[in-house]
Length: 434
Image 1: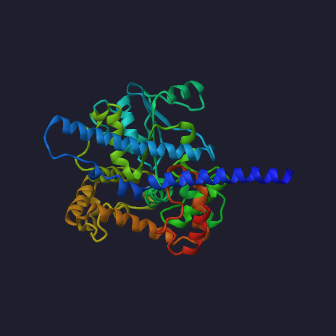
Image 2 (image 1 turned 45 degrees about the horizontal axis):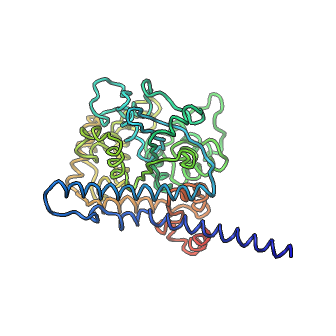
Image 3 (image 1 turned 30 degrees about the vertical axis):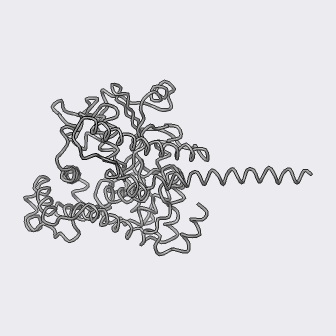
C-alpha cells in the first residue's frame, strides 16, 4: 500500500516537471530569432494606403500591440525559467529618475549605446558642450565618473525598493555571439593585452602570474581557443573572470531584477526605439548619426588609436598592424565586404595616418564594395561559426554548461547547428536532454 502511494506521488512530480519544460520550450520557440524574423516583421503589420489621422493612429496602435506582445512573451519565458532556478545577482545599475527608467548593464550587449543615453540624460558627459549622447567619447562612456547619477546597489534595501518602482530594462545576447565579440574587441585588438592577456600567456608558458617584479609580455597572438579555455576555467571555478563574459544571470539576474523591457541584440535597434518612445525619451535620438555604421567604425577606430598611445601597447604593435587588425575585425563583423582590399594609402603611408583618415578610407571601401544587410549578417555569422567549429569538442561542449541559465532564460539555442555542424550525433543526443 505504501509503495503504491510513493509511485503515485513520484508520477505526479515527473508529470509536472515535464509540463514545465514543455512550457519553457514553447516560449523559447516563440521568441527565437528565427521566429521573430519570420513571424514578427514590420511589413506584417496591416497598413492601409489611405491618408488620414485614423489610419496613422491605427498603424501606431498595431505597432504598439505587436511590440508589447513580444515583450510579454519574453517576460513569460523568464518567469517560467525562474521556477527552475533563481540563482544569480544584480549589479551595475543605471537610472534616470525623471523618466522613471532603470537599466542593468550587460557588457557586450549594447551597453555602449545605453550608457551613452543614461550619461547624456543625467549630464555625466565629461563635457558641458555635448548636445547628443552619440558625441560622448567612448573612454568617458565606460570609465568616466557618475557625479550626477550616482551609483545604486541592489543589495541595499532602499535602492532595491526604488528600482522596483521604475521601468526596468535588460538587454540579452546569445552567449556564442557575446563571447566572439569579446574576443575580437578585447583580445584580437589590444584592449586586454596587458591584463587578462597576461594571464593567458603565462598559462601557455606554464608560469605563475602575479609574481612581484614580473615583466609583462606582448599578448597580441592569443588564439580564440586559448580565450575560450580561459573563460571556461575562470567561470568553472567561479572567480577570476570578467564582466564582459560572465553569464548574464550573474550580472543582471532577471529573476531578481524582474525587467519590464527585455531587449535582445538580434532586435536591438527596433527595441531601443520603442522603449525610448514608450518612456517619453524619443528626443535623445534627434541628433543621432545619419550612418550607424560610420559612427560605430569611427568610435572603434578612435578608441583603439587611443590605446596605441599607451607605452605597453606601443612596444607590442604599431599603427599599420593595428589598422590591419581593425580591418580584419570589421570584415569578421560584416561591416566591410570580405572582398574589399586593404586601403593602399594606409599601407604605403602609415606614418601620416590618424583616426579620421583611416575612418574615411574605410568608409570609401564600404561604399565601393556595397553588400546587402543579409550578406553582411551572413558574413558575420560565417566568421563566428567557422571559429567555433575549429574548437575541440571537449571545450565546445562546456559552453552550454557554463551558460546554461542564459540559454534557458533568454531562449537561445545551446547547440546551434552551424556551430555543432561536425558533431551531429552528439548534438542530437543532447538536444533530447535539454
